[in-house]
Image (cartoon, rainbow, N blue to C red):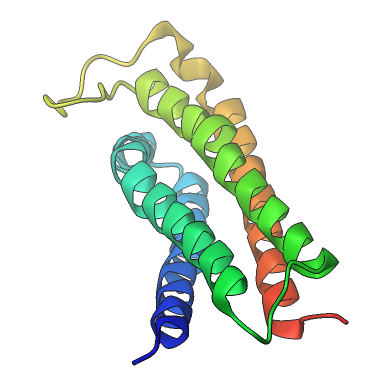
Length: 162
């Protein structure tokens, strides 16, 4: 197996997890939010903020590094405009997800009475629980914007405009 093949494998597998996992989590979050079960939504948000940084941050960063390395060592690829745009959008998605999306889901979990960290227990919902529906709308909107960025990255990588 060549270095190029190994890097391509990492880009595809980590990239699929980065994009597909984000879509799956956002669809689940949307369905749970629509159900009206605030307990389930709070538990989901608390789990999301525990899992997402390692899963999506890790695979997103791994894919970004592997993609840059792949372009650098590949004879058929170069840092042409579409590659640079894809890499910039990839980085923008990582930053958006790590900040705005992550903080939004954290605020939902806390507003619905779920502490974050090692104890993982529920507590009495905070005074801010009345604002939870607005927080959910914001978190889902930001999540879908992040997914749109990721889809554009995938389209650029697959389509490879000249």
